[in-house]
Length: 188
Image (cartoon, rainbow, N blue to C red; front, top):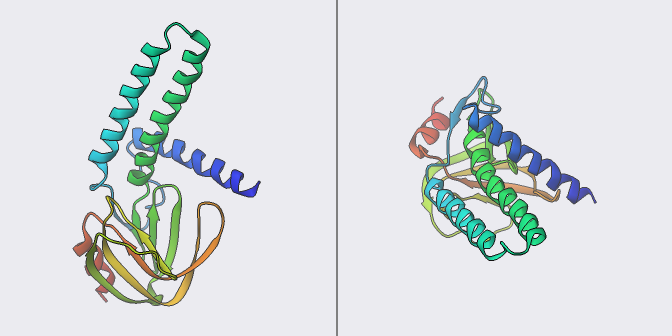
């Protein structure tokens, strides 16, 4: 039951992100420097929305003689299109944020991990396309790629989408400007 509540809160954050995106605002970036990570997924998300819209039109044509089924599937299809757009919007309005004492690593509406700067022992620009699941590692890929690797002195706790706690000591993430993020993290 708790997992369903977490999923409902996640979905609410996705739709709130859609409103913020339409208003051209970001969330949680005040007092820090924002680093976006959505440049690599825009075309893929646009293609997915296009396919969903084509599917909506096709199903509507096929079910034009069955009004109840047509209305139910039309509502589900519209919901799906809005959800896909909202997932992209969540990534746009929730960038990574570097403050004076922490790096806030985010990925859409479902990852928001605060890493104290003094616990980062190594940071490097490292483009990776394959991510084997490993204990203690968190991979936040965009377009199946990460561009920055953070090694931590002590594990931080990541709360997964369904509420499980996972201790991570290596974080791999994507940034549109990986060199700028690495430079900002290594600058004294």
